[in-house]
Length: 147
Image (cartoon, helix red, strand yellow):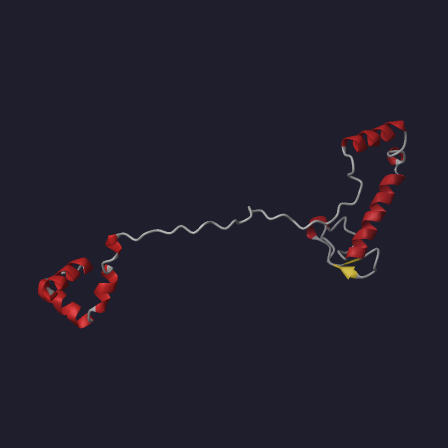
């Protein structure tokens, strides 16, 4: 098995480069944009010089093929204006604010608020005396004591 070359000289810019390991045996140009264009031009020139490809784009068959394609794709040869890309989501429309009446159950203090209003020492004392550990049980006991 032959070892791949570690360095190769670019046929366009004449600088040394590391070829891609997947195509080390075939790569003759580096990855610079100008060199890639030169590689493409050379590849097309070699393809068109082969005898079966010389008249590939000439003749009545190809003329008719191009006419049919242009008929099926009208205006595709024109340059498209660069448009701003459309958003991938629907436009957001403001929604009406719905006024809700609070029920009478919301008028009472919320358990968390009432529970933390008490001193932690006081709550611990009640929990210790009553043997309760749940927050709502301690709150119910505290309300009974306050009444």
